[in-house]
Amino acid sequence: MPDGPEHPETWVFHLAMAWLGDPDHSLSYEERLAMIKERAKEMGEPARSAFTWIPSDTLVHKADISYWISQPWNNHEGRMTLVGDAAHPMPPYRGQGLNHCICDVSNLISAISSIRSQQSTFSEAISAYDKEIVPRGAEEVKCSVENGFMLHDWKKVLESPVFTNGFKPMTGHDVAETKKEEPGASEHAQVQMQREQEVAAH
Image 1 (cartoon, helix red, strand yellow):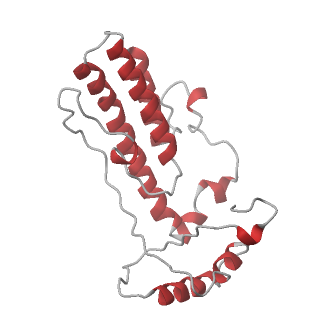
Image 2: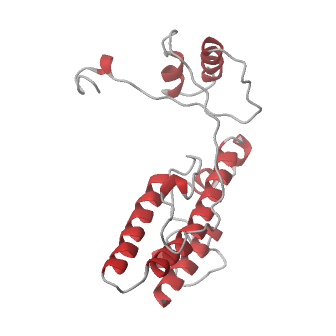
């Protein structure tokens, strides 16, 4: 909002549209914009207008979604580690990237604090940090990829809990209230519960 909320004509927006398929790297800015506007005709409002009103001189860039599943790395006896997207670059389809980054930083600060207080060596503290972040990051990247494929398949979207159950609490998704690995608990919830039990045990 360059000139504030009272001047919407000066606002700058970032719009993104994604779909499954092989990318055509030969398209020009104009051809990409034309493709986006054509696809937007089938969307509901306000998305349809947001895309069809894009100025004709807009430079439409292409961004391939990339990711990798977190794997253990060599921390060189605690002298090196990874945080955020360096540790778990994930697609945006669950909106969890920033949340995990905040968790990473919090855990890393705790590890560094234990080193400063001489409760742990560099190797011990950073290795413990790595042991937690790798499986957590790997699980979230896989969940994000899975959710991305589902969101681009309308038949799967119609079968999703949001459509079949509505916005009601689902069994197993509130980890705080789920005290054990119940048959109805989701795989993600079970992984989270197991992780919390391991942390509590230490």
